[in-house]
Image (tube, rainbow, N blue to C red; front, side):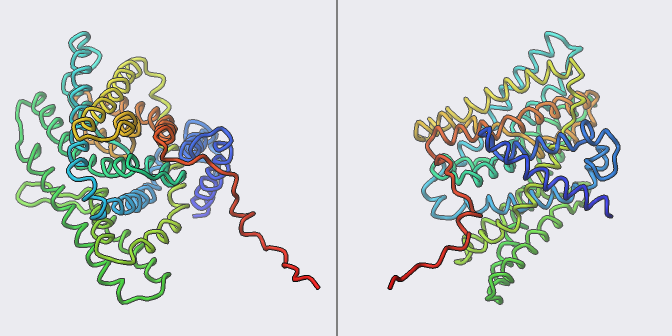
Length: 430
């Protein structure tokens, strides 16, 4: 137990100290947390085998998976705040069109590139693996994006559209992956299952949205019994923990595997709650303050999970470079043309695609499922390599794009410690 506490404290304190260096270099705090995780992980300090100093093995990092799941739940709950009715009315159908189009275009572009690579050198990557990687390419990480937005207090049409698209991306990516993985499995086995390709993902999306809506409604009804700010905040935290726990439940009905999407459940809970509770803005802000150290731990642990071992595999690096290059092109042009079709501002057309590059947990989860393919190890390693690159570079690119769009104000020199220092008494004179 003491080793767990020491590891977590080292992760939290180390991440915060590293963020000071990152600020001097003009990098987002998210990047500092990820680098801290890399340093404390099994490939750096953790490899020394010193108890309490870093994470010695990947299995040890995996023990803290519950922290990452809970943090993702709170992140998704916060993104739900972007789907307020007033905001949705102003955006219209633009969010749906852009959210779907950029994901589909990205999948198509990566599919074409990797399928072409397969025919050029079949030994490099199999056709089922190429198709599966194309679907995984659609996934975008909401956590890093939201943290950059919060750190720099970004605000404007690009920021609001970005957060909505990132939320929708999870549902679209789930369908794309289920279809592509089903086709890939059928190519290997010769049998295609309509249930696993279409029915199960649609059931997962519908049930996730329904569970999230119910949780948001119940949270609103119960918070009316409390008048203390601290108790309403505690109740909200309890409900997010409940939705995270329920979203992990899986069962089978009549041969159909039923599960939930953690991101969709918590996002829908936040959306419903924010639209029916008139004090939701204040509660969301208080919950956000409580989750600050949890978010730091989430990104440090994410950094510790990054596998540097893939850098020693030339074949993986080659396929990974092709994947990263064409995924980036797909995101950029998919977002650009869908924004142009929906009459978005020029700054949104130019910068939205770049802000959609970060990729992490959702993609890794898909890669884990894809390991059942004959070439599943290649899929996993390529995704690990891309996550390593995107997580370290993506937050900085997101920051620069939001700054170029004029939605991040230049950082000031204010210090909370100085601002809150006791003021000298004012002399009233004689």
